[in-house]
Image (cartoon, rainbow, N blue to C red; front, top):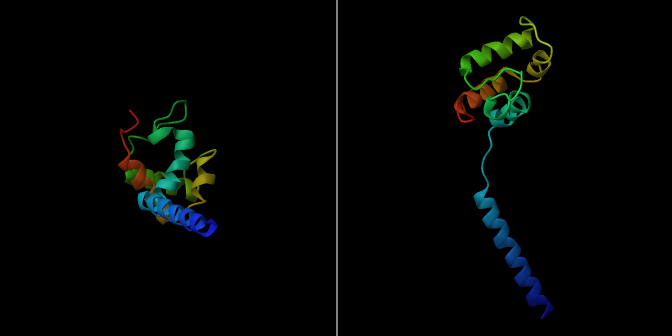
Length: 106
C-alpha cells in the first residue's frame, strides 16, 4: 500500500511539473534589463514621478543615449553608472524591448 501511494504521489508530482514547465514563458535578456529601467522610469517606461518617461523614445535614440552615458560624453548622476554595467549588445536588446512596449502603459 505504501509503495503504491508513493508511486501515485510521484506520478502526480511529475504530471504537475510537466504541466507547469509546459506553460513556462521565455524571457529575453533585453526584457530582464528593461525591467530594471522600469524601477525608476515606471511600468512600461511611463514615469509616475519627475524621472523622465521613456515610453515614447525610439530604440535607436535609447541606444545612442545609453552609449553616451556609458562613454561619459553625456552628463548624468545615475545613468552613467547603470549604462557602464551593460555591454553594447545588452543595451541594444534592452532598447529594442522598451521600444516594443511603447504606449502599453498609457
